[in-house]
Length: 360
Image 1 (cartoon, one colour):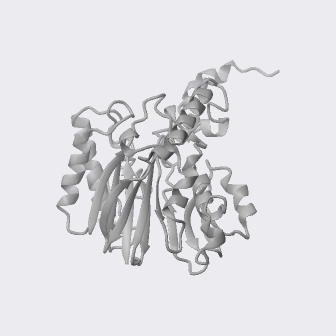
Image 2: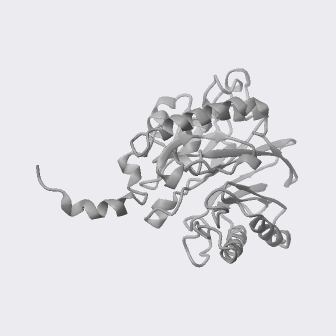
């Protein structure tokens, strides 16, 4: 069995929240290159987030793997502080490692499986948004026959998939078998600030097909400390959506929560890794996708999947949507609704107005 772990953290922005300083990438590489528990690794960035892509045989939630990632983030935070980068270590909510990196700030998506004769894997990484941003694309990948033709014409996936949904507010989960329970699930995942798709399994044999990170920083910290910037792993081909089917949902730049100060709605823009440097109003929210072929746990790649002229029109549309949304200024729906603004810095501003209200 092979385990693929994608673990990310914001350990310091350059400049502001827009880029990743090369010294942080080099620090992470130097630490991971000297370990003896990984099969392979790839380090990259999406905006100001450090992304660790790791393969090993230790299973999910392994203490040694999580401790290694935590050590990387701590050392990179120290380097970020040395360079006086912005928000150094903002995703590290705890001072010491406690056995599992979940609940400590960094985002985690892990998947364990038996490697197929050919194992094409897509790693999606986002910046300036929340885990619910994956809801619409994942639904379209694994449940929409207008996106994934294989749901109709491929007998291996014709029976559909089982979706695990997390309620990130009340810490509950529920499974839905699609297509039979499609409408029930849509009633929930249309509220992405609360209900998030965690994983997808094939109905015929329960084989894992996709997994996401669902960590919500503001809920863990009890205050606004930055957006969650989620990650996602998707297995493709031979019993799962084809590579092109898994990418097709991102031809629509749907609105997601995040953007400037985590307080606005903006278009989810697919872009090449070299373009994942959000500067306009700290955005718009970005998504990158790196493709790998696994070979006995070795990562062959990456291929930058959105570095393709066929996504140029999506980026053009996203920029037009960004223009439209910015013209709302501080008004909803450009700004998030009141419930979600409770988890930003706005409540601190409103406190000074509390004593000025009088009964009608």
